[in-house]
Amino acid sequence: MGYVFKNSFGSMGSDPGQFSVPFGICSDIFDNIFVADANNNRIQKFDASGNFLMSFGSAGDPNEPGHFWQPYGVAVSSTGDIYVCDQGHSRICKYNSSGTELFCWGGFGTGDYNFRAPWGIAIDHENCVFVADMNNHCIKKYSPRGEHMFTFGAEGSTDPNFLAPCAVAVDKTGIYVADSVRSRLQKFSLSGNYKFGWGRPGHGDSEFLDLAGLGVDQQGNIFATDWQLLVKLFAIDGSYMSGLGSLGSGEGQFSRCNAICKTTAGLLYVVDRGNNRIQIWESDGTPKIESLWSLQIGPVS
View 1 (tube, one colour):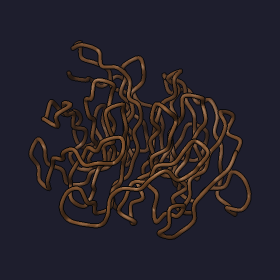
View 2 (cartoon, helix red, strand yellow):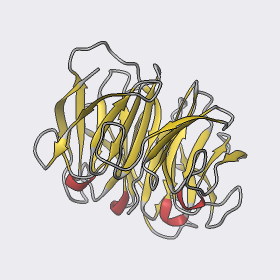
View 3 (cartoon, helix red, strand yellow):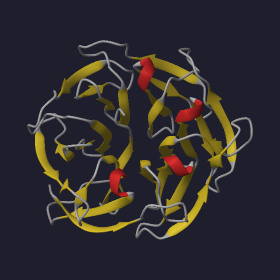
């Protein structure tokens, strides 16, 4: 399995289709692309070619609908509802497919309905919501109505604990977590029981320096982004398969790649945060991999 650079879209700015520190990314069942444009305090929607479709959100009072403060993660359910990690307000907000706010939950704290830096978000095949609550060092699961279901993980330097989990992904076999400070990926059962983990600080194939984004496809292949070491692909057992990209600002080069998602058409979309653009990668001709269930974001600042 390998990928080659296809195209990119976006530039620095605040106009439609431009970005100021893009963070999270996901796709819907129609292969539309959603980007959490953090410093512009909005979510932007594009078609699969990168053509701007719409945006919603702005900076402002969290008590008024549609206001964010640095949205970091975004995920879309199979019904088209959009969930956003409103990181600056320590909450999760749910929107309909038109970008109208339905409800939010959260607030700064350590309880079941509180967060301290919610960075990553993912949705499973039942449209339940998983949140990487970074500074509480745990993963929280909620129903589509925002009802708390369970929490797993605690602060610690050995598996199955976390030190600042920045991203979460889920498929029908389990939950995957990017543990940023420990430079480690871990897999859990759908009920939150530890299965296995891999990775450590370093420059090797299965090593990381600044874990950022995470995704998994329906065959269990795992995609991880690293601010410094770009994009790495792993098999279902965690063994290294390949990598893509290099440092820079040219085609196929990244400056702090952040989040990643994959569409049903088999294209990879990577947030090139430092270059304020989204890169599109296509298969190099090896067998097609099915689409990601979900992915989300975030390296440690």
